[in-house]
Amino acid sequence: MAARDSLQSQLEHLQTKYVGTGHADTTKYEWAVNQHRDTLASFVGHQHLLDYLAVAESAPLGRLRYRLLEKMIDPCGPPPPTEDEEADSTDSAAVAHAQAAAAAQAQAVAAAAAAAAAAAASQPAAFGFGAGDVPRPPGQMSGVSTGPQ
Image 1: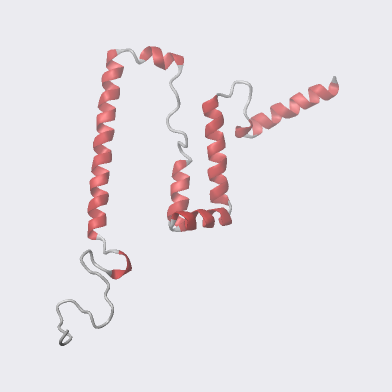
Image 2 (image 1 turned 180 degrees about the vertical axis):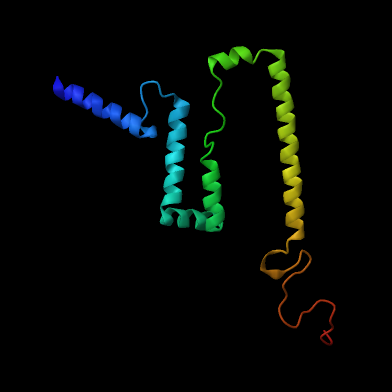
């Protein structure tokens, strides 16, 4: 019996010390969030995994690390509504508030997309060529006559 009590106390100690070990009341969402955060933390913490992802995604290391850290904030999206929230969501004021928030978020996304498109348009294209420039072999310059053809 003492071994059983000892095992139970060790398990309780681990559950209080480490967040991701879970407990009897851990929901599927909480488990998935812990799993995703552990994976993302491993990617950020192990340089060889970060290098591999950067090569696979053709992204700079700093930008990739920043994106992974940002993703750790809410890796699985918003939590599912609880029973109390479901009962309250039928209230018309809550529905109107949710619709207004969704409209504001849609406007923010559209504004961010427009700003990104404007920034991309103002940036020079890769390899130093402009939007209308096409690399040509020597001797085939556009607008310059190289002699009879």
